[in-house]
Every structure is written in C-alpha cells, then in structure tokens.
Image 1: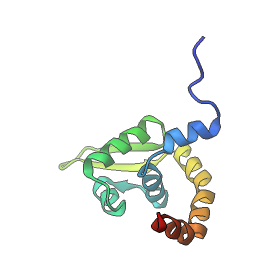
Image 2: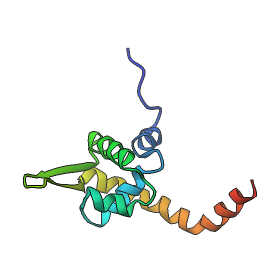
Image 3: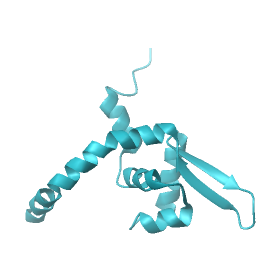
Length: 112
C-alpha cells in the first residue's frame, strides 16, 4: 500500500501554495482576471520564467483557469477557479496576521 502523500491538511495546503510567489499571484487574481503582462507588473520582482512556471503549477492544481482568446496577437487571461477563491478565503486571515505583525517581523529579522 502506498504511503499517503500528505500527513495532514495543512501539509497539503502549504504544498499547493508554498513558495514566495503563488500566494501573491492568487491575491492579485482575487481582484479580477488578469492578462500575463498585468500579472507580471503587479507581482513585483517576479521574472517572466518564474511567473510562467507558477501559473502552470496553479493551473495544474486547479486553482487558476487559463483562457486563450483566439485573436492576433493571442490574448490569454488568467482567473481564479472556485477552488482558488476558496484558498484565497482561507489565506485572508494569514494575510491579516502578517499585516498586524509586519513591523515586528521586519525588526526581528533586521537584527539577525
């Protein structure tokens, strides 16, 4: 019998949204669907290569929908799926916690 992939729900959730960029991409898409260029501008500091890979991962995991509009030049729009919206709702309290404690975290890390 195969070992379970995850030990608990938190393990699964962190695997899906882990890393520096995925939560930020989801956060930007929560406002409205975006084209690739708009995403790249709004997620400051992300490279094109990394954004492409992160979007592929989020699409694979069912959190982001990629819609290609057949026109010249091609138009691709990314949006959240229902699953992506539910994950954003779960991340909102974590974002609130980060906002409340950002000064402390920044000061503590500056000392090390």
